[in-house]
Every structure is written in structure tokens, then in C-alpha cells.
Image 1 (cartoon, one colour):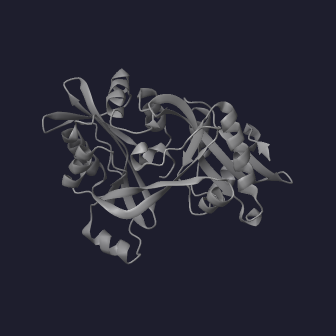
Image 2 (tube, helix red, strand yellow; image 1 turned 120 degrees about the horizontal axis):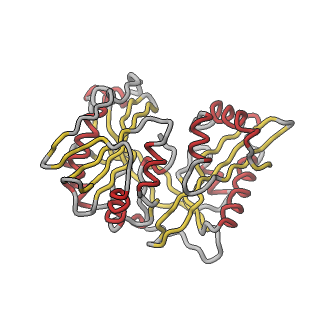
Image 3 (cartoon, one colour; image 1 turned 180 degrees about the vertical axis):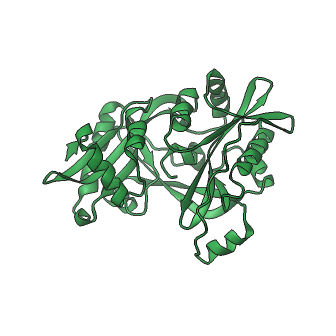
Length: 334
């Protein structure tokens, strides 16, 4: 096991491209791990005869944990060359990363594991199951529902051509955002009163996570005059034969269901014609969820595995469903 250095960048990216569930280009790797405002990530490699055969990585996120801001180290990218699976490569790398995360001050860690890593986290590394998060969806093509049920892939699709024209919906102006400022800091603070523990949502995080990303995201703000009342971030992916628009982030104060509805309307327009469905992880507010139901969303049968582990003696991972709030953009799902 060795700690990552820039000399192994090409080999690491190649390994992820071959066997990783999430594939990162060289540019994406630099953005995600080197330019993260919460600090450089922890990346460990398994090397055999000079060849990189395994990787386990953690990223840092500024997190409001039980109302107190701290840094959590979160596993985000893991991959093992098929020739070396079953030999304890991933579990060895992950133990090293968790020790480094604990030494950095991260009191605990949580993640959304893939099917291959989940049993290793649970049986060998002492993680615990947390309540799974249910994906919500709004179908955009009737035929796509039938096709998905039959297991038939559709066309890849994508986002519509960018349109910077502002729109007025229900008395609110919806604008394309090309940079977030202090108004996002204030919105994040207001929205946080309705969340459990969550990654801090402010201008610094949103600028890095979405606007500086090599991947394509569209960020929209709902304004009354110059007051920012809500933000939606939209992306597109093609997974399991389904062309899906996804709401990577959706932020509004708890008392703002109308803001949710106009932002979702704009998000639907952004992917209509290029996606079979629009999917998201819903915000915790009941009023916001009712607004999503009125906008045509419904809870699906798909749940994302969610697990956690204390890293310090005395630290506790809250197992209540309402204790956490995440969005699809918080990790590298899409």
C-alpha cells in the first residue's frame, strides 16, 4: 500500500476507467481531489510490481454535524483490478484511509456504497446500516416507463441547449446562475434549519461542486427582486439503459414550497425531450415533498444504501431517518 502521488495519476485514472463504478478523467480527478475547498482528499493505492491494482479514496466535506460544523472524510472512489479481488486489497486500503481520516479529526464517516463494496464495509470493516434513501422520479416519456419495465435501453439523450433567458413563474424570476455569492451563504443558512446533519451549502461549496466542475451542470436561482429564495442544480446521466435528468441539488427555506415548484418546473424544461425521467432525493420538509408530489414526482422502489462508522472513541452515528440530509450531488452517484 502506498499513498497517492501525482506520479501515479495516469495509472489511477486508467484503473478507474477499466473497473471503477465512477470514472474520472484526469481533469475531473484534479478538480475533485486537489481543488476541493474542504482540503485535499485521502487516496491510497495498492501497487504490484509497479502496477496500480487498487485504489480507495476519501474526500473531505465541511459538514454541519448535529448543528456543529466539522470536516468529515467520506469514501467516494474505490476500485480493484479483477485479478486481485478476494485478496483483501480494498479492506486494507480502506482501513488505512479510515486511520488517516481519524487522525485528521473526522469523528465519523458515512457513504453510499456500491454493490461490490457494501459487503466488505459491513462484514470486514465494521460499518453499520443506516436508513436507506428513497429516490423520487417524475416520468417525462410514457413509453420510457414500459421500456424500463421490460429492461430495454432507450436513447442517451442529454440536456437541452443552454438558455440564459430569465423566466417569471408564479411571481418569481428564475435566472441561470454563473457564480454564487454571499446570497447563497444566507440561503444555505436559512435552508439548514430544516435539515439534519448535512454538507454545508454555501457559495464556496456550490461554486466548486457545480460551476467549477468539468461535468455539465445547470444552476438556477429563484429570485424576488434581488433576494435569492431558492436554487436548483440540474444534470443528466445515462444509467441502466435510462436517460435521466437529475436534480443534483435543491435548496429553499422550509417555508418555501412555491419556490420548490417553480424551480422544478425550470428543471423539467431543461431536460424535457432529452430524458426519460427527472430524478432526485427529496428534501426533508413535508411542505417541500408535497410540492414535489403536486409537480408530478412520486417515490420509487429504488433506495440508495447508506452506511456509517464512528472513527473516534465516543463518536456516535445517528441512525434516525431524519438525522441526515443528502442530495444526489453530494456524492459521485451521477
